[in-house]
Image (cartoon, rainbow, N blue to C red; front, side):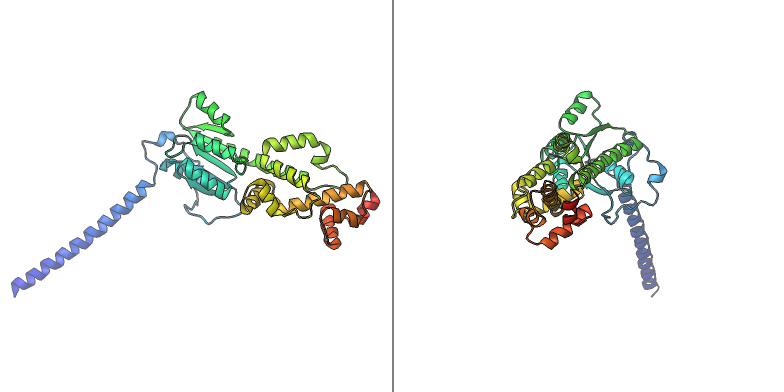
Length: 328
């Protein structure tokens, strides 16, 4: 009986020891997993310390917010991925790709406002990714910053020749990179303001397009060949009553979703709004020259419903087409 009690006691002690050992093992695994996501001390010189305010209350995973600019980082180095997410994850909608091929597909899918790409990566390097992005008419407008440890001028020149908008060498200052990102995104925002002035005509005839048409079209073709080509097609077919988004997508050799997304992101307008604005602008030209009545101008630019034509005309010019015709 005593032996039986001793055996039971020993078994109970072994079970307790095993339970404690399992708990310690789980804690060690959790610590190792956490450590694998923390920048190593040996690689610290590649990165500069992030200002304290950048790291406060920053969730690693955050629900997407449509009012944030989209930032795509193409980088295979885990530590730098984490570093850039901490640096930009709070202010921007942060997207990540681990090589140029993945980054190219993701850029075509999400249409980011800016791309930061490393140079030396597996599968496809940053040079080739930059070249393909800038040669694709649907992504050529996206600003690209190349981020690399290659410090010689040859690589910087190569990146710029392929279309990179800026080039920054590791180790880099987080504030310098932040400033470059904000500057390039602001330049795209300024271009949207330019589109607003270009696409919305005025009664006084002082839109950007009317005051300096040649320079306007040249600037547009340089900065955004996709939108430049789109406007040329619309202008060429403005009297075609069958002109619609499907026709435009076919002419531009892109899918309808790509056309919608690209136009909205680049200009701030929908495709329908651009077509409508062009039609109203053409009708206003006819009214200014007194070559057409209101009804004739409306029909000439594709409106079968005079009420809808008046409504759209008032939305753009602020007065009825009959008053516009009378006052010119």
